Length: 428
Image (tube, rainbow, N blue to C red):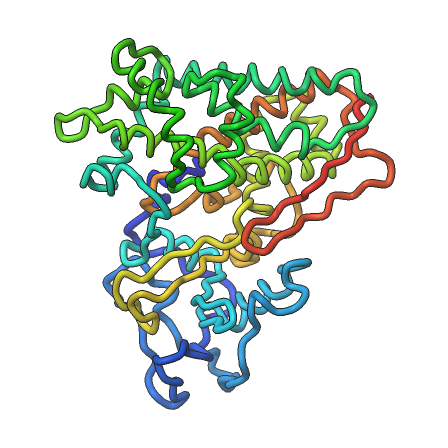
C-alpha cells in the first residue's frame, strides 16, 4: 500500500509528466563549477529508471534564467511551503539548494523515480539488520515481513485496537480535549509496545526513548537496549505470538539473529511507530474534521477509512522532505551529494493529481509516496495504517459527537516534518 516493498513499477521508467518540461540546472553546488548555458546538458544515465530527470532541455520558447533559485530555508517557507513547491515544480524540477545543502527534486514522477533509484541510498542513522548481520536489504525485508502475518499480525491488530479504545475512553467524560497531546501523541508507541509484547506500564519511558534516538530506519538507544535484553532472553526460551518472538525466532542464512540485531529491529519498529505516525494521524484527523460530510460517510462505511488515510498522506505527509545520498554520480548530481525528495511538493503535483490541494477522502488514486522509500523497507507503514483505522474507529465509537472546538482551526507547522501541533475538539 504505502510501504516501500518496492514502489509500483519500480525499475521501470516512470510516467512522463504532463506538466511543463524540465529546465536546465540553474545552479551548482560548491566545487562542481557553474554550468555554461550554451553547453550540452549533463543527462542522467538513460539506462536507469530515473528517466524524468534525464531531460534538462529548457522549454524552447523561454531563455534559461541564471537567477539564484529559491531555497527551502527562505523566510516564510516553514509557515507555508506550497508557493515554493509550485515554483520548484514548474521552474526548478532539479536544482541545488545551496543554503539547504541538497539537490531538490519536487515533481511526483521524479520523486517516485528517485526513491526507487538504487544509486540514491538512505544511510541508516543507527543499527539495522543489514549492518549488524552483514545481510542484504532483501534479507532484512524477508525477516521483518513475516512478523506482520499470522498470529503476530492478529496480536498487532488487537493491540492497536485495544490501545485506541483505552485512550478514547479516557476522554469520554471530558467536554474538550487536545487530540494531539492526549491521543495522537501516545497511540502509535503504545500500539507498538503492545505488539512487541512489552508491559503496558512501560509505555511512557519507551515513548521517551523513541523520541531521543530512534526513527523508521532504526537507531541505537542504550537504555532501550538494556530494557529489551531480558525480554529477548525470555522470548528465545519461550516464544509467543508477539512481534518480539517473531524476531527472536527469525533466521538469516540459516542462523538466528543475534540479540543485538533483534534489539536493533525492535528499535526500528518502535521508531516507525513514533513521531512520524503521530504526525500523520494528527493530519488525518484534521482533514476529516475539516470535512464533516466526508467524515459522516466514513462513519457509515468504515471500509473507506484506508482510502481516506492514503489521501491524507498524499495531501499532508508527515515528512515533507526525505533525504537520499548519491552513492555514485547521477547525471549532474555528484557522488556523496544529498538529494532532498520533496514529498510535500510531489503529493500536490497537478501533473499527477486533479485539484491536488483539495482533500478528497474518496479520491480513486492518491498515489504511494508518504511511506514510500523505494526499495527501503519501512515496517511502519502497516503499523501506521492500523493506527489510523482503529484510532478513528475508537474515536467515532466512543465520541460520536466529535467536532472542532468553537473558533479553532488547525495550523500545520514544520518544514522537514509537518503537522498540526494542536487539535482542540469538542467531545460532547
